[in-house]
Image (cartoon, rainbow, N blue to C red):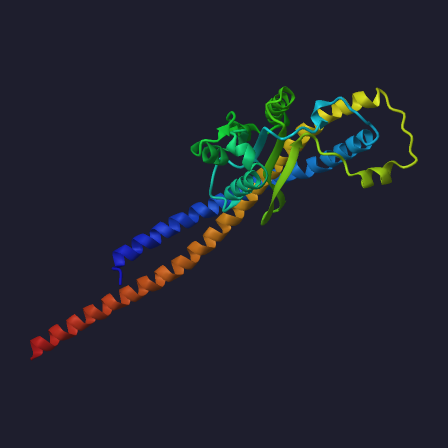
Length: 294
C-alpha cells in the first residue's frame, strides 16, 4: 500500500487536472454556442443556393463552365478539415481515418503514381500527412484565428485555380458534420467538379414553369457555380469548427467525471493508509506501556 505522502500527492495532482478539464469544458461550451449559431445561420443559405443552381443548370446543356466538366481523375486533391488543437477525443483521428480510407479505396493508383495531394485546414492533419511524406500543399492553420468567409475563400480560390489549370482533376473534402454537442458525422463530399443536381427533384420543382432570366441563364450559372463552391467549403469548415468544440466539451466532461471517480478511489486508499498508520501507532503505544508495566 502506498504511503500517505504519495497518496496525498496523487490526490492533489488529480484535483488540479480536474480543475483544468472543468475550465476547458466551460470554454468549449461558450465557443460551441457561437460556432453553432454560425453554422445554423449558413445552412439555409447554402441549401437554397444549391437548389437555385440545380434549377438553373438542369436545363442548361453543354455549359462552358470548367467547374462542372467531368475529367478522368488522374490527379486528386483531398481537403481535410480538422483542428489545430487536440483534447477532443477521436475528432481529428476520425478525419484522418476517413481520408486514408478514401485514398485506399478510390485513389490507390493515383497514390502510387504520386498524384494525390493534400490541403489541410487544421494543424493536426497537416502534421500527420507531412510526417508521412504526402504532397501537402500550403499551410492553412491560421484560418481559425479569424474564421471568416473571406479567409476561407482564399483557400477555395487557390483550389479552383489549380482545378482550371489541370493540377487537379477531382477535389474531395473530408470533415466532421455537426449535429449536436455529442454527435458528429464524418462526411466526404465532392467539391470539384460540381456534382450534378438530382434530376428527379429538379424536374418535380420545375415542371411547367417558364422563367424569364436577366441576365442570361448561362451568365447566372457561371456566377453561381464559383460562389456555390466557396459556400460549400466554408460550410464544411464551420461544421468542423462546431464539431470540434462539441467533441472537446464532451471529452472534457467525461474526463472530469473520470477524475471524480479516481479521486474517490484515492481518498479511500488514503483513509485506509491513514487508518493503518493509526492502528500501528496505537499498537506500538500499547506494547510500550505493557513493557514498562511488566
